[in-house]
Length: 349
Length: 168
Image 1: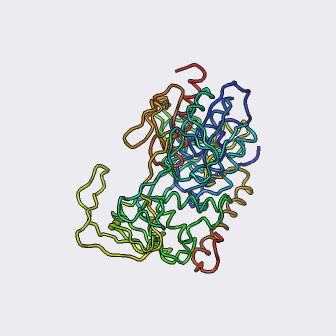
Image 2: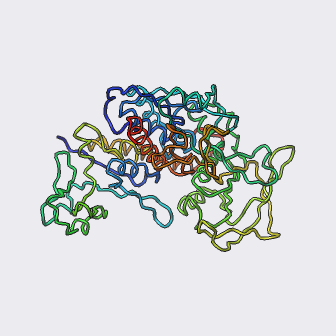
Image 3: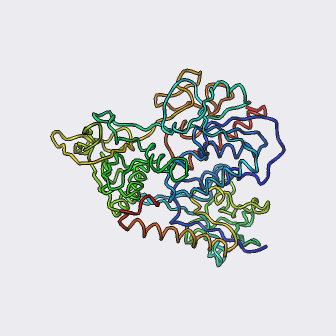
């Protein structure tokens, strides 16, 4: 990926310094735009390598690892971008998925003082976990952490021993979006004996689409539609089974999809060793206390038409603004934000 | 200059929409490559394929469609009369009527970028490497390499993985 696709060579420097927090698709595309305008860019990321979910979440058979690596290497070698990896920018204490590699923490307000402009592109690194009994048992994973560990081992940042040993085991993935599909597929590839996919609606409502679900079924994944986990059953602190409740579809909800209604007394159990929750993620801005940057009730950073937050000179882009989306949407948001930053830095609106 | 091919591979597309984003970013919000989803959710990117024997070029009554020295099929919007015959014969439904220009437009394989020695923006940014640009033999070589990987993956995932460890 040539993030600096807008130019061929490095232009003469403007002398302005920009910090980009988060090296995912939004942050790297914005970096590409800004270096093509001659700004000096420093990119901060808590992971040991730039790339964000393109490297640490999405399976290799979808996005080849070398594509992302060539991209950020060009930014570093040709365009002089400084990458601060393993560095978490934060204000206030908070644990998120993917924090395993943090070697250093930098105060958010310090960054603000050091740079002429700041872009927040930290994405959505916290997975929802259902509020049911047994989610604290050993063997329960948020999908992002599960995928993140698998990709970290493939990338050489973690040993294979850090991956949940699902080989020969039974795995249940909850959800039917792209993350759920990827978690199920990776489980199959790791040699899990049985992989279940539980979804509270039907295949027709599955966010990943019927085609992806059918592909999984062909690979032996057991598709349990119209089911919702009621509780996770453990023994000696470890997962041994999941109790599912059957659902029926009722009236449409605010999303326009028919609402799943659990059926009383329809509970049944399935023996599993691992439960992976892929039921959505929430934004993870680099602050957990009030720094004057407004967020909405879903935790998304609020920005104006210029992609600027409620603090002058601090911009935001990507999933941390829009909520979980797609690589391409994050790329466009990053480019648009970078364009606004450039105009602002040059003294315009 | 030598012939260049621009190839969008439908099997490698993951539907992330990066191509659409970068194309619309450099074309004032109008992308010349667009992803469509089938009812079962399969993403299909639709873009000009710059055909060797382009039906649009043959049918255009105004002679507004020509090929440049690298083989890109290009519409001269000044000559275009807006009859949409090109759209009628295009096997991929690509040509698009632009209300402001009062002419048909489409992908020009990033003509201005190629002049500066750069590849089309979508091919440079596609994370899945599903968009290829280059000399025909180079493009074909990389497609075969990717296909070989895919065949291997299908074969491995069809086998019982017991005892093979975490080779994948």
